[in-house]
Amino acid sequence: MVLQIEITPLNQWMQGGGRPFIISGPCSAESEEQVMKTAITLAGIKEVKAFRAGIWKPRTRPGSFEGVGSKGLKWLRKVKEETGLLTATEVANEKHVFEAIKYGVDILWIGARTSVNPFTVQEIADALAGTDVIVLVKNPVNPDIDLWTGAIERIASAGIKRIGAIHRGFSTFEKTAYRNQPNWQIPIELRRRIPGLPIICDPSHIGGARKYIFELSQKAMDLNFEGLIIESHYDPEKALSDAAQQITPDELVEVLARLVLRNPDPADPKLLDTLGELRQQIDVFDDHLIELLEQRMQIADRIGEFKKHNNITVLQSARWDEVISKAVVKGKDKGLSAELIDAVFKAIHQESINRQIRIINKEMLNNNK
Image 1 (tube, one colour):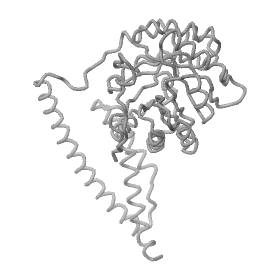
Image 2: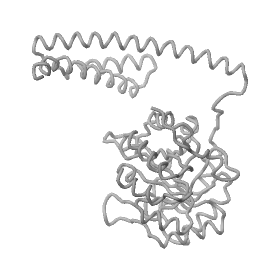
Image 3: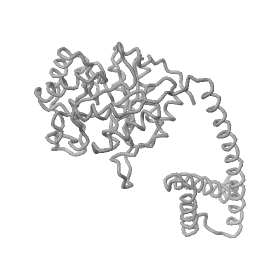
């Protein structure tokens, strides 16, 4: 599925824009002094094009800092007037949209807790109709690409052409180093579905700790993302929200200086030829993989028939544990990560189970017709 959505290229959003497009600022606007002090410092960093600050903060539980509210929009307007930076904030309902536009906020983003709800996204889209504001849509909390795609479609249907996506990672019950799992294949698939869609990575929310910001930013650049939204506070340790994932403007300078920006396509014809040959080899192996998967599923079908005739349950947990354990060990010997083996074999195993269930239930379904 490839969607035809009219999107204004990122380099036309503003003058002098280049890759990466950097949005930076504190998680939350806390005071006029904090906002201005951080913004003035960030304005001195040539890569920073927009200043972000949360005005309304959707918190998991009541009682925590939920933002200063509309009065903070005056501070953002002052930032724009005194530094020339674009301004950005999150909106979660139509009231937020009207208030932010009234104060001249340039970039509105729809947060992960909001993009998961089509009703709310549509409400925001209706409020945006007739405006020319930049809108960025964060991925939903859970890894549901259809929800993410649908949210972008709703905003585009309101006539917004300066539209992009923010990849901020996905919630998971598994204990990992990161606060939110990157699941890089999902934003990659989003770009395939919506060609020309700018994608901005949010390493602050993916990592949840400042020590991960550089490595996640570099990964995003290696995947040819257009920009980064990085939380920066002049005194992160005293931040009222998400203190652990914010960095100082000086630390932001260091992160940006270390980034390696690679070309998406080599200009040298010889390099293109070499790359083409290697891709052809990949295509051959992909064809072999598909043929092997077909053969494997044929065996799974035969197992399904055997289980049906002998009244055996589809799933034997001990057998599955044995398969995955052996595969992880063999994969490690071949230089393959446990994460790759686990993901691939889980997908294959689930498909095998689905096919066997269909085989076992086929006769019963036919009898019920």
